Amino acid sequence: MDIAPRLTPTEALGLRYGAAVPPAGPWNQHIDLLLSHRSVRGFRADALPDGTLETLVAAAQSAATSSNLQTWSVVAVTDPERRAALAKLANNQKHITQCPLFLVWLADPSRNQRLGEAEGVDLPTLPYMETFLVAAIDAALAAQNAVVAAESLGLSTVYIGALRNDPAQVATLLGLPPGVVGVFGLCIGYAASDVANEVKPRLPQAAVLFHDTYGHAEEPALRAAYDAEMVAFSARQGMGPENWSRRVIGRMGKISALSGRDRLVEILRSLGFGLR
Image (cartoon, rainbow, N blue to C red; front, side, top):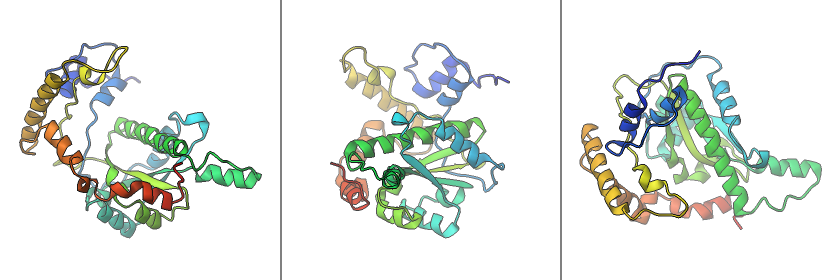
């Protein structure tokens, strides 16, 4: 049975874009669901219905995968001590230990390597950057399918990129073989009653959508308008007056903001990725 959209297209687009609302086009409940996405960082302890994990993995495996190589895997982490250790690596994000389902998504060409070894065939493309990139993209596509599926079931989610602060320790905690790396985590569960996140505005479409050639002459003005939207959003969320431009500069303007991820190439090579 179809579910009626939560908002009109104009209302949903207004929440996502603020004043820079693009024209509404074709619409259905699936698009409405996508536009209502928000990250949630507080979860109830309620257990998920039986079979939820398997349903989400089925959705994940239905995502596109380059040449059907299927170079990703996922670990559902249930052990409390292991979760606590992962939370510590990820800047003590409490929702990792709080959510009923925590998944670590893996770039995993190792399964294909084992296939080659079993068949007595050398796979010389394995050490190349392209293979790692395909695996990381495959993992991201799969995870996003799982997120959309989870939100369609009334669940909330938040990605945990901070697992890349120490991929080697993540590999140790999860018993990953060489040639496998955790690219991010994902918390899934029912939002806590005191969590009331708004839909976060995004850059105007004109700042990211180009026709035939790259760029927009009004990019500075578009950015300034978006900064104003984000100041208003941050104020409503009690987050202070920071705008998007200052956020980007704070996050990308110093190497220390990478929290150890400046060594990622070195770490990936130590985990068995050639990156040639």
